[in-house]
Amino acid sequence: MVETVYFVDSDNINPFHNLALQAHIINNIPDDSLVFLVWRNNDSIILGNKSNAYTECNISQLEIEKTRLCRRESHGKTVFNDLGTLNYAFFLYMNNYNPTDQINVIYQALARMQLPVYIENDEIMLNKLHLTDNNYYIKQQKCMHAGSLYWSCDKGKRARLLKDQIIKRNIINIVDYDPLVRYVDVKESILQSLANLYGDVYQMSITDDLLDYVENYHSYKYVYNTDSKYTIRLSDSYDFGSAQIYVDLYRNKILRINLFLPQENVEVSNLIVDTFNDLVVDELQFNQRLRKVDEKYHQDFIKLFNKIKKESYCL
Picture: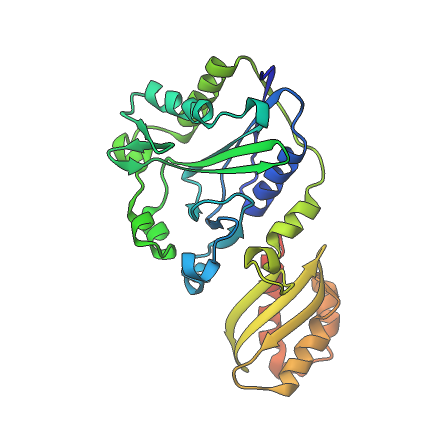
């Protein structure tokens, strides 16, 4: 029996942070408790645990669309998240786990808002389209039931990034039905529904260091489900030619950098490796190394450094 209900409201919109937060919570569920987490993500594609990144989404379009690629622990379909998506997760031990009760929290909240919703195949539907996408994860008697609720999702961008033709077209936003519904209205209604069905809800703050979790979820190896150990993969054009660059980053330090140049250029390859290997992502140290590089490469190297710096901000 659930004796205590806790609510965690993440104000961080970095998808890797929120994946880390989920991992931390499922590993630390208090006894006889339910922990309910709500969060939003910046534009991101969230792969199911065993999904193939290249078959699920248009990889080459992600950088153009400024969208991050992530992978979660749970199985299920690939989803697109943006600030128009309300994400939620229930964390409980197996003896208290009941997906029907949990989805009913969301259903009752939406029904109270006079939305003509109904449940079909464990998803909340509106006008025969998905209003939610749910996924589930069980780890040693600890359970997570998570979902994405589409409030005002960018359906056009979602369709451009996802490859599955059915998934592209099968969702509806709350604001498609009622443009006056605010995000905060939806969240407050869900919390009221949670209290109605489970009892008093207590705020919980997570102050633990999530860095190790974040580094795992942000790693190239985890996201692409590969044995290659790279945190960041960049594909771009430079004055010396197009390049694919792979960076293994740990705690803001580049442990190693590898690259592939379609037009092999040994001089440039060696210069990049010498300049960026063992480099702390810090402008002062970078500028010291840049002084040793021929000026004709400076703009390209600065461009590369800035891209690595931008990609590494959450580590």
